[in-house]
Length: 264
Image 1 (cartoon, helix red, strand yellow):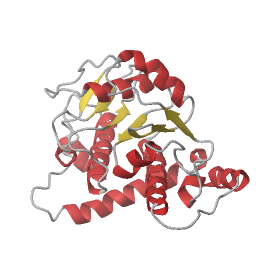
Image 2: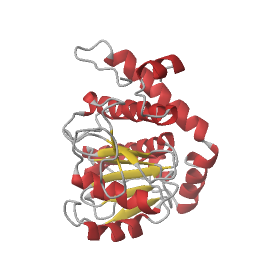
Image 3: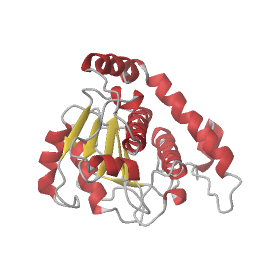
């Protein structure tokens, strides 16, 4: 993720070390989403709250593809969507509504991720939602919330219902729409999303196969969930997984034409 010398060499004078390191990690996450094919053109968002008393958070500049995002071009906005940094880029209204709603009430939701992956959207269109009958799905027993589709999320009046749907959970399936996760760190939100995305991928393949599915009982699912996603004791593992994937992505992507270092 880059040593202190790299951070000091490129950090703008008006940005603290702590915020700059957070910007680098968020920019890396956007690149990782692009590498994993979790993107939808210039849409969808990953937001991270900036440390400090003010409720400011970083979001992607609207109009840039994820592979173009760097630490310096991320946009810092307040809870009302006002640009409080030096960026000249606009912010997507739909992204702001969803993310600001959660950031405004969940003190623990420092990072929020939202995707429109094919598998996530496909499962979100199923009336029964996510089946908890595979390795990944079982781990989400009691941890997944649902929110009904109300159209493109650009209206402030939906915020209260979105917040109520999420409650105190960290994984949300936006029906007929996509996936959303949040966490106290970027690594935690990412790990939750990866498990949710993998559960959807496996379900899509399983549903395409002949034969009856093996059903897991609630006790087995609860046992799986208690172990697999106990993030209070897995923060180090979350960060190791994220950093390992970023390292692997860099090995692959650095050889490609047009690679832009996200630390800049």
